[in-house]
Image (cartoon, rainbow, N blue to C red):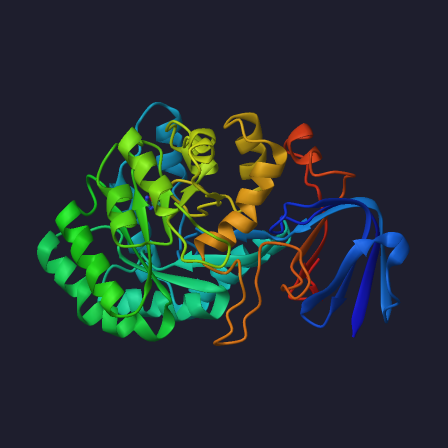
Length: 400
Ligand code: NIG
């Protein structure tokens, strides 16, 4: 079954050449893109969709979410808006609510959040454990996550649970808990921050998870400068996320990790910026402009979670990146599509298991597409807050 999408006013491919085509068409064949080019040259297909002079983008790739939770933290948010500062301790509130919620309800809640994201143009999505914080609850979080998300990250090292000794809990995270979650996860993460896990504990988590064959990511430099970025680069992590407080040496380390990078070569560490979280916690916005200028690829992600960023709106992140972080529209859309794919190492196909590349519109890539109700992607920033998603295809299937 093939579908021709024609009459596309602007096709922002976010491909290797950063091409933007006008008066374009795309053909979807099954789950993949089989043709792109000028509308006048488009081949025939089984079905046709008139884009009506709208803009077509890759679907958003949300590379950082925490969707396996119950409860909300409205009171904490209100206190923050009244002047209190964010601390990692709030995670314990969500852990209590999550532990006392059934598998069925946790799954239902997570699926609802995924559906909300997809309806806004997200077509590829990572999520994490991290609100279970004991062997049983981290394992069921990982199992549930593996049924709702495209990529799953083990974040047993999110917070030391109340009453536990930090080093003993780290032993659990690196030993029996890791073994129990391993069948369900492809990634591991650690919240390397004052109030969460210190450098030594973070190093142990990263080493154990690396030895278990997991890809690595790090929550780092969110609440202050610290060792998170340097550890991420040292361990070859695919991303370091938050990156609000960076020293010149941190930016240099990230840039060096990409020195000599070719599209098909080994990747460095992506800096993932989470602007909705930064606004909701009243932290300085991550220095996305400076990172790009230094040659560091960045991703934009929603960080959807009940504590610091209760939104799945990637459009909001893109808008904020343009209006507040001084990215161009093209740069912001790239960070929210190709950048997310790079942070998940899915910007190229995976021949081992036959998975297709995501995050850009190119022949052979997964047909993950986002049609805006606007003639150009510029409207995402020009019309802030307006819901602009007109249609979504996820792996070739119309999802909205
Ligand atoms: O990415 N920083 C750590 N983890 C989450 C927040 C978790 C929470 O407060 O519930 C984040 O912002």
